[in-house]
Image (cartoon, rainbow, N blue to C red):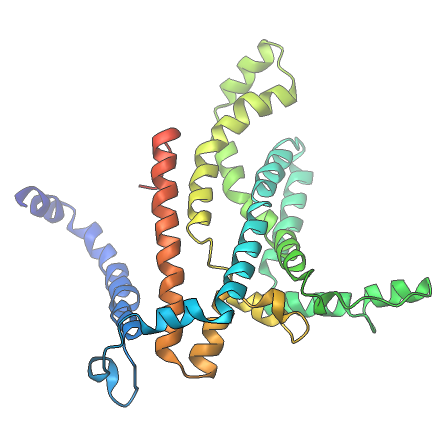
Length: 300
C-alpha cells in the first residue's frame, strides 16, 4: 500500500491526466451495469429498478423456450463463423502491400483500400440496394441485357450472410490491415539482409520472417474477435433486413432491439442481452487461457 502511494505521489501528473478517462469509464461503463438486474425482475418503469418485483430466471426460461431462440442463435452463430473465415484476408493483404517496393504505388494503393472504411453503414447498405436491385439496379440491367429476370438478392434469406460478410470484407480489409502493416514495419531490416545473404527468395522471407512476426498480433486480434462471437453488429443487419430475408437475418442484437425498444419488454430484452454477454465473456476467457497455454500469447 505504501509502495503504491509512493508511486502515485511520484507520478501524480500522469495519474491526473488519467483521471478524466477513469471517471468517464466509471460513469458510462460500470455504473450502468447496475441496470442488468432488471433481467431478473418484472421491471416496471413507474416502480423503478429497486421497486420492481423479482422474477428470478423467468425471462431466461422464456427466451430458451421461445421459437426465436433457435432461429436467432443459429443466424448469429452462422454469420459470426462465416466472418471468421475471412479473418486471414487482412493478413494476406498486408503481406501483399508490404511487398510493394515503390513508395508512390504503395501509398496510392493503401489510400484507395482504406477509403471504403469511411463510408457510413447507411450509405453502404444504400449502395448495395441500388446495385443489387432487380428492377433498376446494375444487376437488374445486366440480366435484362440477356433477356433474363434478375433475382432479388437483397430479399434472399440464404444469401443474406454472404452479402453481409463480403460487403464487410470490401469495406474493412484495407483498414484492418493497418495493424499488421505496423507490425511488419517493426521487423528489423537486418533479418531480411541476412536472409538475402543466405539466398532466400521473397516467398521464403514471407514464410520464415513475416508470418512468424505477425503471429502474436494475429492471435491477440483473433482472441478479441472470438470474444465477440455472438456480437454481430446491429446497425448493418437491421438496415439490410426486410420481410423477405427475415428468416436468415434475425440475430440476437436485432431481436433485442425489437423486443426491448419496440415492444417495451425491458426485462425480457435485458435477459437476452445478458445471455449474449455471458457467452461472449466465457469464450473470451477460455480462448485466452488456451492461447496462453499453447502459444504463450494472450491479452492478459
